[in-house]
Image 1 (cartoon, rainbow, N blue to C red):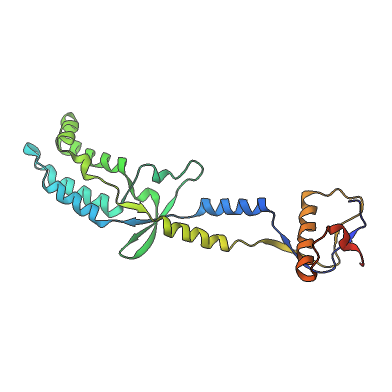
Image 2: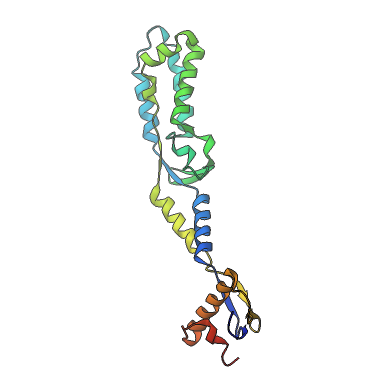
Length: 220
């Protein structure tokens, strides 16, 4: 610092840097809990389709599969990729909107498409035996009974994220009057530059100065 020691003439808020603000935005993005809409018609159509399946000698499967479908759709079914989130975020919870009310639940309490199909196949194996399970499952077209019934409500999720961004404070504390901002001969570190920028911003806002902060010491 090639100028005289700069002492704050007044209290001023220390502004966060753009890097700090970006990191807070990234943190909020990683913490956001997405909203999903539940489509109850999917489960209804699955039961309707099950009633039309011809099981032949394995008719005793029907009530067991119906019970499993009820279990699956009572929890909900996500697309396989959605339960994982993106590559940098582990999705732990989601909000599920049913009957106009959103409930927060752990993501591992809902089924993925693949997991739901495995459950149906397991029912077939338990009732018919592993030896014929794959044949019965495929010939009956049971894969078609499982569909995604939880779809991302992007609009609501984005609105919640935008609202959380508004809560980010642009400042990180208060620098008190009469404290030294930088002394003659000091190395101007990133932290010092942050103080200088904050001081200049506050000075400009209150007095109308927008020049180099080095001149702010004049008249101290």
